Amino acid sequence: MRKGGSFLLEPVVVPVFTREMFTDEQREIEQTVKQFAKEKILSNNEMLSELNKDLTLEMMREAGALGLTAIDIPEQYGGLALDKTTSALVVEALTTGQCASFAVTFSVHVCIGTLPIVFFGSEAQKEKYLPKLATAEWLGAYALTEPEAGSDALNIKTSAYLAEDGKAYVLNGTKQYVSNGGWADIFITFAKIDEKDFTAFILDRDSEGLSTGPEEKKMGIKGSSTTNLVLENVRVPKENLLGKPGEGHHIALNILNIGRFKLGAADLGGCKACVTLATQYALDRIQFGQPIAFFESVRKKLADMLVQTYTLDSVIYRTVGLMDKRIASLDIQVPDFNMQIMNALEEYAIEASLAKIMGSETLFHVSDHGIQIYGGYGFSEDYPMARVFRDNRIDRIFEGTNEINRMVAYGYYLKKALMEELPLRDAERSWKREAPTKAHPLQWEIHVLDVARRITLKCLYEAISLYGQNLRDEQIIGEDIADLILGYYGASSTLNRILQQGDRTLKDRAFIALARLAVVGYLEEVWRIAFRLKPVLFSSKYGQNLMTDLEKNLQKLHPPFDPVKEVHILTDDLFHYRHYRF
Image 1 (cartoon, rainbow, N blue to C red):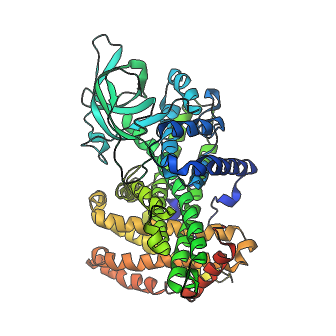
Image 2 (image 1 turned 90 degrees about the vertical axis):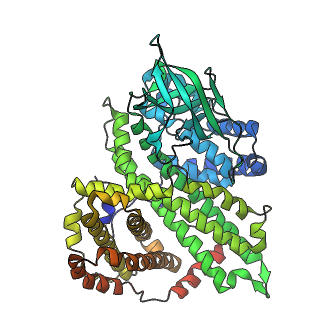
Image 3 (image 1 turned 135 degrees about the horizontal axis):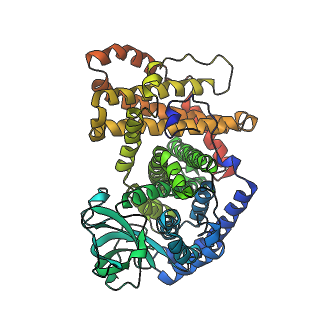
């Protein structure tokens, strides 16, 4: 079984899960969700994008009637108990309705508003809450952030103490930016018992002393509910304590791993819509006697949008494929099965964080290109790109900021290296590798990604050697290394996805162009980041001995083909289909 983060130590070409491997059942579910999104969400897009509680809850219950809100809930509580791949594709397909506000309401409910009870709830809690959450009769919310505790979640001030009668805990405090806050029926909430034990609780909306503030006036996702949650001597029955006292951080952090890959999946759906909309607009918009699509600067933007979207697609399903494979190896009969699932998901915390970073930042770049292609119309709220751009901005803050998620990525590598869970020391010693001799349409891409992988691995190892555990505090260096890791994970996922499809893709020049442009885009990042890291990681007496090898490996990254030609090949294919076809 592959360990989390091991992709950096493996050969470039390895088996990966991709969307081409969906089962017939998964494809049927995907089509059902897309039909619902088109008929119910897209047709009500304008109303759902403004604060409309009644319509949003109606749509949620219709989604519940189709089973879409029950994907992750066990069957005995009215759920479907489907895999993480299906969970991701449902969120992705739902975004074809082009309404980020509804997607946020849905995602918060099915993920962080429900899963803490699925994985950590008692039998009584599951029987009470999950059936109604499964149908969206009750809406869930998650209240962790406070005015003085955002990314530093463990520094919350909300207090809890055992009441004199011993039957309940009394909670006091204020939670901030609670998604679904104004509409939720239950709140997964965190407080410190006796000012020390960070603990999770399930709060009912009708609890005395519980109130919500006015709706936040937000930059985007204006159709979703976001409020404060105020707790004034709220009595919470002891049976509503979630998990064990003092173990709330396990709930908070592990549930976020699921939220992260799901957020990336939602962003993927938005990216595909942007590619299609921008392509069709560029082909129909005539300037200087021809469609603007055929101007070189527009071609380049459309190619970037398509390549980044395909790469994100490859990363999302590679990640959930790893999770599903590990979960499938577990024994469902063991008493701590749900905790084993949590451990399996935590194993791929690196990959989940990378999926979240890539999803949120890819949609930002793709929508930004889309606005530029639309020109002045892109800045108008009457056209789709402006709303996508505004709505997406929160995604780099949701589920842990991207800065925190980069720290998760290099922090877990540091932890795994120090605990010898990943043999970084052995791997970094053999960073010279000859090019493959077997003829292959993507031979150079395979070889050069292996070179880039070893450069990335070497930089990571040198940073750990130089800073040790203090690497956690060297965030400038850490973020650069995280970006090297992120870029390799994306480019290798793309390349492997194309290779696994065999002749269907290797004889299709558009796929070859996709692979080449994805790899070249990563190599540009390697050059840029290595230029900045060299004086830091390779300037000591020890490091200087490696400078020559580093320079030699960087010289291997020059492409033997014309990237401009590949842009033309890829965009000609895009213009033929007029939509994202991959």
